[in-house]
Length: 330
Image 1: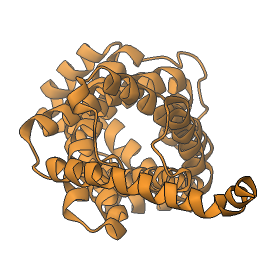
Image 2: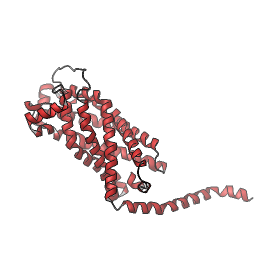
Image 3: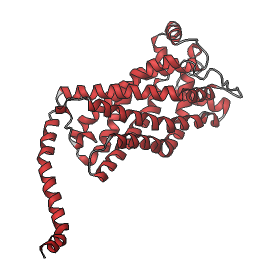
Image 4: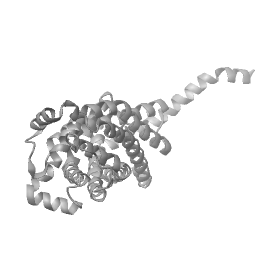
């Protein structure tokens, strides 16, 4: 009789046990959140350091793996009229590009992570998407100071204008001045800031949804899978749309960056007018195929490597630094 009663009441007991278990954990969560809310300088520096390392490594892996696709895209966009595309030397300028991508990607994630954590503590939980959007835009703006010169040098090497990155930097500065390394800066920001913000926001929201559904922290394999899934999901849905929409800006950026001292185009508007007048509106979509392909594969690789590297770095923290509140990890 007693056994039968125990079996009958087991759902209620399970619910009570779960409630008691949650109640026991709640003080720790509140205490942890309060500690996290202090915004200690050490927390900021740790987030920056881990984001810097993980972002730099992920960026280098993506660029090294997909550089030939990017070279083809650049040459398609640079070709005017019926110019033919040369499929030789697809790795031209890779070494110099990696030298710039490493700090650029590191700065992006290094700024994004602590900014995200600070904004999440300031915003209500239902506005986490705004925090991620803002942090993505700020990270993109900070990294653009390195990304733009890297892009200028890379694209001129891809189009065969220089033999090496050091030669490219030296001759660009000699002929065009230091500002020559930042030509096309405006079109770069118009193309990348919205995309960076949307990309990281969707990625983070997918992770939040998964973690809330699982009602627990994710383990290493799950983080890597979510990172890869989010990257591919962004790329072949949102990425396919935004990639297509921003391709004209990418074409304009390429033309401005590779024109050199010839100054064929006087700015973004003049570049658009000239391209449409001389080559037709379809020329503004040059390289759309390789661009969407690069975004798709690159997103999967980047987020997968990024999450795995962040997990490895987190495991190396002292035990006292590993109790990060759930909200702050979103």
